[in-house]
Length: 128
View 1 (cartoon, rainbow, N blue to C red):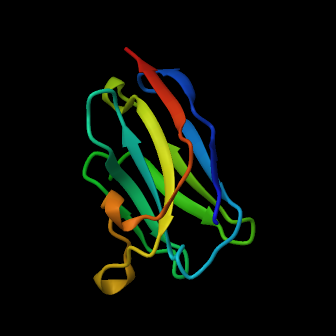
View 2: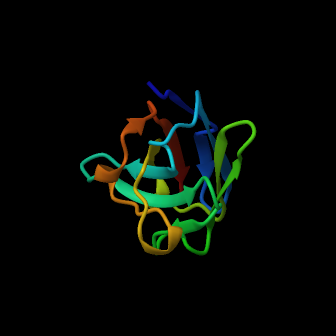
């Protein structure tokens, strides 16, 4: 059973930045993709960014494209999400997830259903 532990959440003012970390207990054939998701109260969980561990290919949703960056330290089995210029609408519980959600071209999709392992989440609060 792969365990994922997120850290780095917190409370910032609009325009601030945070770096989230996700440490995986191991990588297996079922953890080809690592993704960051978020869920705000009353809303569905949505994908933010994903990375294909093997090749490092990254994908982003439109809301994250210009402000967020996903990266990895493969040796340490850690995936990061650098978030810049945070907005109040970015406030949510952020989850790290792992799965084999590979799409065409070696990119990982960001549908929550494609991910098998989930962390407990780390809270991000953004005040205006």
